[in-house]
Image 1: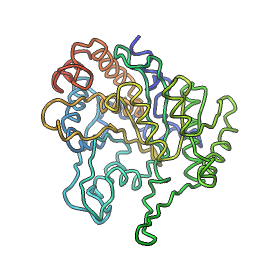
Image 2: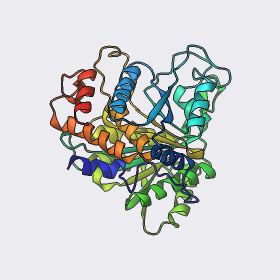
Image 3: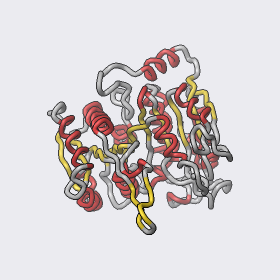
Image 4: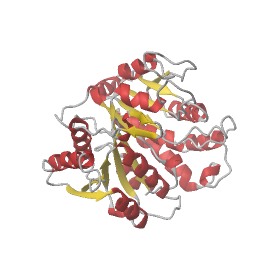
Length: 375
């Protein structure tokens, strides 16, 4: 029962969350093909791991422990945030770290807090820009056995990840007047819209909602909607609708079951995906994965680094574990993904071992061991 609801959101053997086909051509990705060959030969698959900052190393260790116990054929290549700016990336992430993801095509990232300072880019922005991670995919679903205000949440937010207000193009016009440029391009809009409709079709979803503010930003959001409409015409079996973002927020809070797959520009996606996480218990329960050109998939926990509890053995590893499950499905290691996914669900549903954010008193170590015991 617990696994059936989650499997629809996270994907199953026949329809995984991160489809291994190119939505434009329909051809199998080299990542999935390579994974099948390697898994059949029981050779380890190399994957990049960014443990991150704050609680990151602790929850990353939980993932490694669970993977070891589940005998997942993953060989981690770990990379850490540096303490000096790399001039090649203009951030505290090194070029070698980015090259690791490019080479491995798959990775997992813990929370990263950008150090305060000047002259460097956000760590997350660096990853998105340099690796061209154009779509952020976040399933949002009610977890059986964990009671929130809603019992029937089961939706997907797909966020354009490379432009919009997050293009980073700001300047001072005159003293006291600062201008920020919102960039929307046809190429990026078509790409994320194509991914959203392909995702909906592959996972048996019935409706795609384009979220916008084109009534005010007629040129930018207008172009985004035009691209979504163009793609929608190729998928007549999928219902298509357009919803203004402020109305979308109200509808989500009143009745989240009104939505299925939502696709939107960058800033709206950042806001809506966090709102959706709040509907089902918070970011600590929400998996996420970034899809990039060339078959790259970088799964991540999207919650903060929580420096106030770092090193205290109090962190909840659920979000990073569920994100790791999406990574396994991308690699078509469905047996391993199912086993870990069910262990997480059963542990939370049982209620005996829960971390403080879930209303319990368990440590990270105890919660992780309980998941291992359920494998």
